[in-house]
Amino acid sequence: MMRKSILLLTVDCLRADHVGFMGYGRATTPFLDALAAESFVFPAAIVAGAPTYYSFPAILASRYPLALGRDVLGLAPGEPTLASVLKQAGYATASFGAANPYISSRFGYELGFDTFRDFLKDELTAPFDRKHADPQAHAVPVSGWMSRLNRAIQKVRPSLGPLRLAYDELYFQYCQRVTPAAESLDALRRFPAAEIIVDHACNWLASVGDKPFFLWLHLMDPHAPYCPKEQALRLMECDPVTPFRVRYLNSFWNRSDIGPRRLAWHRDEVMNLYDAGIRWVDEQTRRLIETLRLSKKWDDCIFAFTADHGEEFLDHGGRFHPPSRLSEELIRVPLLVRVPGRAGNSKKNGVKGVFSMLHLAPTLLEAAQLLAPAAFQGRSYWPQMYAAENFDAIAISESVAGCTNPLHPENRLRPRVLSVREARFKLSLHFDTKRDELYDLEADPGENAPLAPAAQKPVRRHLLEIAYLHLQRARDERLRAQARLHELRLEWEKPANRASPVISQPAH
Ligand SMILES: [Zn+2]
Image 1 (tube, rainbow, N blue to C red):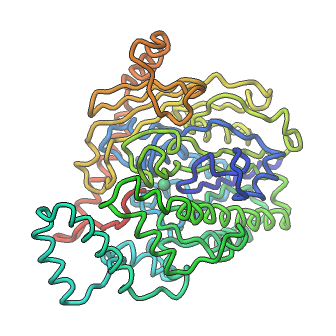
Image 2: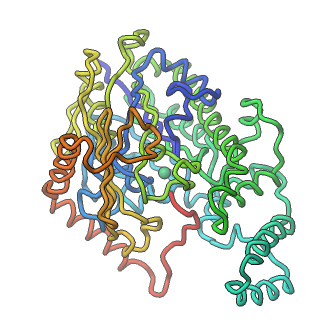
Image 3: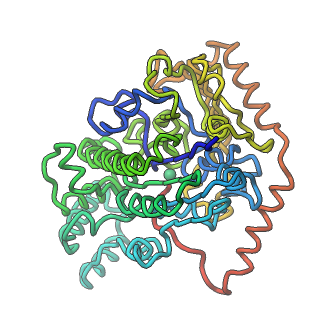
């Protein structure tokens, strides 16, 4: 019997509630919404950590991100992954990722892939590479007298009182106006857009012949800076927006000198750009799947569409996706799984309950009739999906608070944040401030007010016990040693005096 192929499409920063098939009101995903009718849709898919570097160990290797120690980032050499299992089973394997440095070969993600392209050091995408390597690439060029004046004002700035705010505002507006205009949205974009990644994927698919394949694509279109394709804005029927306005909005949204109330002035406009990024993902997914249909590969292809984490738009006063909280806008992601032969049965395919992304890899393997390795910490939910049973699952998410740049190893050792989420209640533990907060997501889906300490005591105790058992879990010392050795080797191989690569993004 012919093995089923697997297509895994992950999208950076895609929060669940901005996706049509998850209930969003805007048409961000019309193609995927139609596909959802013949797929399993998971209403509460929860990532095992956020951002990117705390999420992908679970998606690809079914392992909690901090399970090998907080200092270990990425996958360990020799760690079994979805890709390595499928490669061993005779699959052709390939990965094309839109230049996210945290899922590059530097962090072990090429494991098990015959073809691995992360678009970080590529001639074709050299502009993206330069923008990563040069932290000044996005800095505003300021003329000589202005920078001298600015330096002088910076010295007295703390004593300016209320004038300081007026100065900050004037300086921000000035910088926006003196920066040379970008000629197009494409010139502003920091990551390769979805059509570039899909083009490469289609070329590769044409080369695999009749072999079963595993193809993983990671798209960055909804990631900040929010610079969608102009076609996507037209598809969303947005009012025309100039490159100047797009850059202005992104610079405004990135300001650290103003609070949430001021930022909220442009929140909807910024979100429009984010939504258009999602629409482009949907449009290119349609193109990819049409290619699979034309080449008759779609009939034997399992398809999983998901995200590595969400994105905050001031829901709790913050922006982007720094690892300081594990609130729903950051950990709840869309998840759609289409399995051929189970199509056209959408009512029965409705999945209920919480699903941790830790279980995705073993579930996909069983759907393809393959065994998951014993090292996977998650387990397959394919039998429950197949029988349309409800899940009675718990999802644990963990990150290191404030570790926005894990390339500095000392950042990785900060205290962790941990959440234990079941269908109704969610316990969040902050180890830095020794706080624990229990939320009733049915009564308070926005997590605005934690329950009083005396409320729901049995629930709190139960979730605390789960957190305790999770932290007591035995560590795989062999994998940990391999990961540490790999890291040391990278340090040794680094030419003397060469600084580690600078990544200019605030967080991934
Ligand atoms: Zn990410």
